[in-house]
Length: 636
Image 1 (tube, rainbow, N blue to C red):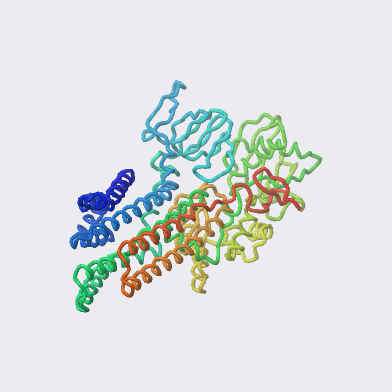
Image 2: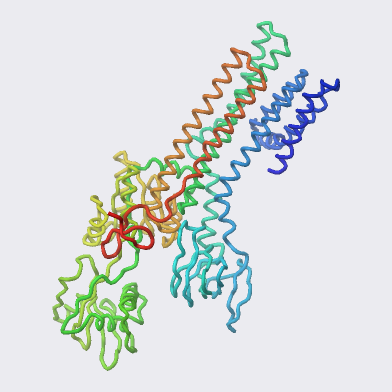
């Protein structure tokens, strides 16, 4: 780009001096020749590259027009043509650099080395390419993690804003997943590597971005497909126009100059440069908000969807159960039930065990000593706690022993865990997946965007109905297998709907691939879902999807407007050239001006910003309507 600026400056100075040369009785053509060389140098290589591929580029049209003008002694016109053309090219490069830079910044998120902890407990800098899964790495405050990992020791927070669009640091604690590209804050943590650098979430994002830049949407792909043919047509029309003007008795220099003007104003620069810039700006605006769109085709489909099918677990819900109720029995207290359950579940890796441990910790319960943990296949777990045996069993296992467990106080959608001490039930816990805090606002925003929500879940009816009632979703389907989800998507498409599928698991992959646009939850989504999805929500913030839809629709509007503006300008300039003998400098000014205007109009998409703190009311676990990350009540 710097070389282009230098060439433009030389061309402008040479042209200006050439125009002033007659005032001192000096020939101006040597200066104009310098301007032609400087102004046209940037177009030579693209012209040669296109010729090797058997194409005629837009740059070739400009070079031909300038050379033709010079050949008949119209040095000033040829110089002005290439000055304005090279100036427009530099402005377009600057514009495109802005859009590419917004996405290319992801490349800077991966450091070149990691602090790998050796067997002696000391750490050493190791090239990021040599870091393997299972290794332990130490990340100090202010340092960036280069691999996907999970916290082993340490408590703190991490800045993932550049990767996911999160406006606030995310908490770090033992067991928390940390994506590559995160910056550790406050305190050092030790992490266990889960993926090699080349297989990390960040590496996949970079690969998807690189792939996305090569994919073009409907309008752009049509323009590119016909561009070479159009350029050949311009050359043919220019030749016919020259012959017609000569046949009408015009002098050759005048006829040739007017033909060159026609060649310039018919050139499709505004379409060839402005439309891809518009699409790239839309991709960058969405990516900056944590909505990674895999190419312009996906962006186009995202802007046309009118039905959004949503998986429940991990999409509308957090994907991890939490204890939502506790019913003590036989005189036991709530804290006692939680303490016994946490002690028995301490040796289990089951997600429900984690829910019980979190509930006990939140209640400030002291977990008693425990030993002899044992899994009871199909029934639950047991452990020696104090002088007795504590079991956490399923209701069916307790019923098989002939005992009745009253649990009417627990939510119908919750999974029940019966806590027994020495064979006697002392309490019942209810655990359920929690609705994502921003899911309500996300659904409302999707409705406002014209997308009808439909839930397709493999979970049971009570769980699905509970979530839908909380979120106000009327259409829901439970007990859906992967084949059923796929059939649902195809049935909606057969009815004329344009379907967006949102999911996070392997079972969602077929439906994600079949929908017009598949949206994968990037934070916890399975690799199969990430690969099948056309869009990835990097922070699992479902409410960001509505912003992505807004950007996609704005991009479609800008593409249509830019197409009309580009073609309209060409038509006006062509008529002016044929009817009013438009001078070449004015034709160049109109042509390059329209190209810059179209490009800048597309770049306006970069000014769009997603709301960073609140998309409207969200639903807290206790059912309150709250706003923002801090959980303040919604005013009014």
